[in-house]
Length: 328
Image (tube, rainbow, N blue to C red; front, side, top):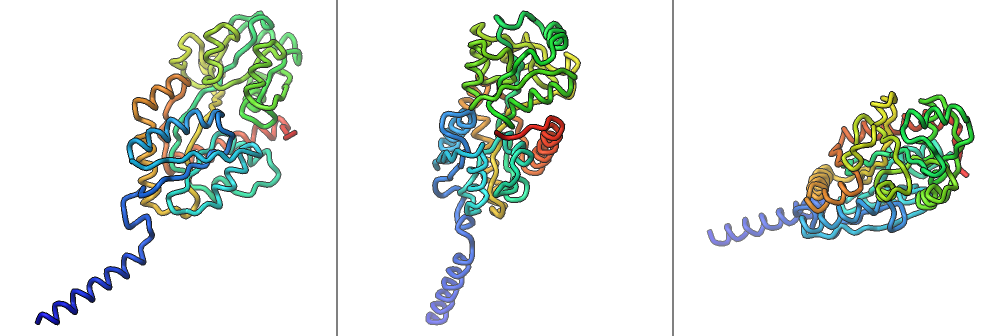
């Protein structure tokens, strides 16, 4: 009897061992069991980092596992996206992309990845409205109505700066021209920082910039905000009217950031990652950073985030086609 029990116990242990070996590593323990890599496809210190790093800090605090920021800049963010698309889909490789990645399919003749096929959307983590700002020493208009009259009376004479051809700053201006039936001249800079510096110096008269980077200069009086994109005013600039109340209900331009996983990442790992990232973004410390940047936490995940991304891809494709925008 004793030998029979021993044999059954040994057999059960052996079968249990085989079963555990057949399970993926992520299923054998609660995710995450080790550090998680987050590819950020822009150089350190950029706009994406402004949200990725506070989110990573809260993720690490809440889970006890580090979310490692891996900056892979180059080719307008498409290099990092391509690396993420080829990363091992084990739940320990994630990707933080931005609005730029929904513009890229229309601007680049060939990409080494397909945003909507090779990457699976997890969570839209931050959205920052763009704001129309002008240099007050170069533009006499103090409100949007007077500014629009000025633009229409002097077609092509006002210049707007952008972070470069094909960026959201550039296409925000092209969308503005289409919806207001006006003409302003585009001046491409090599980055949002230099473009904003050009605006403050008076080298260009206006810019469509993310609220986060413009807010301190607006408050300091170096530039003036005339309109915030979207259907509602932003708490960071409560006195600045939104596009909808100024007669532009379809003018919605945001600089947004989201997290994806490589296609094939296990469903359980994706669900846990989404939930832990959501908790990180909702932590009080992260909320304070978002508020300072004039950002909101949209909390769109899974299929809702995928629908949003698809809409952005189609919207910017139409703007690119209508404007004839091309890369340098």
